[in-house]
Image 1 (spheres, rainbow, N blue to C red):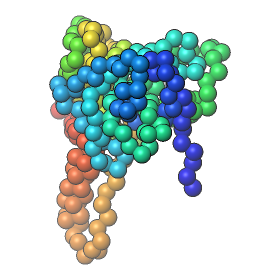
Image 2 (tube, rainbow, N blue to C red):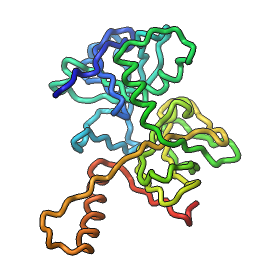
Image 3 (tube, helix red, strand yellow):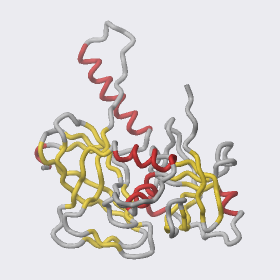
Image 4 (tube, one colour):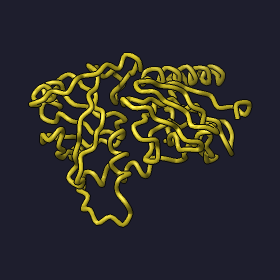
Length: 270
């Protein structure tokens, strides 16, 4: 009934650490005690400017102290990769598994691999990569005609266009392999009201210390289909109009609880 956790080891600033390879997490984390145990402790940087709210699977908010920039090396990589990790308090789980590798690290790692590569990818990593491949239903490309400057430690909303499938009504914006290096994407739920081309607002952020430019017609993010679970009324005598209003109210509460923003995409905004 309960499968084995997708755990393995990575090297963080040269130190071997047990980690969870989690394709369902959009952020990567390190426990504070593990960070403090490093010979040279990286500087914890603040995220106050981003007002980042991170929530776990059951909806509760994940506390964090800030983030650090560290070098991570996977078994199939010859060179380490500089990535940001959120610093989180110690828990029962991260006491034994102090690192969580999410899609913000998995995607740039996967992008370094080529189809003709003879690198032997461990099962834990291959499972996570395969799960990400099957989740994106459409790509969102920028509409800018000139490069957009994204300053260090800043965020902005950029408009993109995508062609969604007629069967997809609700999706969440998510980082993809083709995204600009070091640019992150804030998850945002969007309703796709029509077929054809849709205009999508994408919230991007630059957590690095360098200026990044978004090139014209570049891939901003991918759309991952999500389904809103509607509330089933216990009282069968409730009128249809009452049920519909309750459904919409419950949908809004669910989205608020998981910390995402709902954006309506209408024909007028195309």
